Length: 265
View 1 (tube, rainbow, N blue to C red):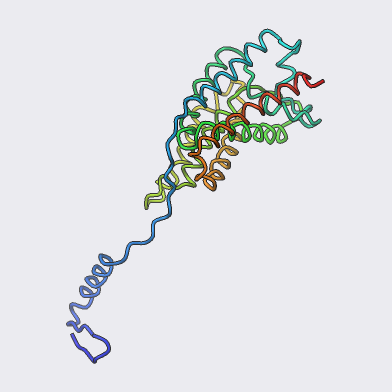
View 2: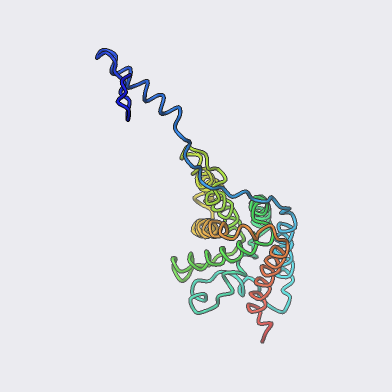
């Protein structure tokens, strides 16, 4: 080791030059300051049951009321997605269609998956905010899916909302860096997992009447909503925010159905 008063010089025999370089690299690597890890959001896990209960109660009540044709209306004709009528301005169909079902198996499937994904989302986002986001994102998904298809397109079912709930979880978990380990594969985990569940549960068989486009749009707009909600995550633990959001979700559905059935007339 040579010193000139300002700097030091390490001298080694030529045959040990490469080994010395390697050992110096090891020393620097072991003593390097760890890089800054990305900031992560720590969610306050909440009780999601009352949000899921509200979801099940809503679609069950609509099923009963539609079965008895209350308010002297054909609920299916008045509330289903109809491409031509939505283009003509009947906006409420993007919402009311979420609460209609073609039969008991269709209903039971949406209850089961809706409860599962609703609990997952409600735990991190809160029950009220979750279902308000689901209603808004799935109605936009129905609108976009309808505009992308032929005007004769018709559909019903809560499955668009179900996959919006799944998208909410994936979007929030990804943007909040809940899986922000060093390896990129872990960072993409929420997205890959969400897409895998969408493919497994949302595409149906080739001969089924599954509206795959609506499922995909539900997931996409739910994902966008989940990422956006990371901007206001500080307010999510506030129970007043949750209650107002939950009430708003129910009011939106009621207003849409009242408009569809001509209650205001």
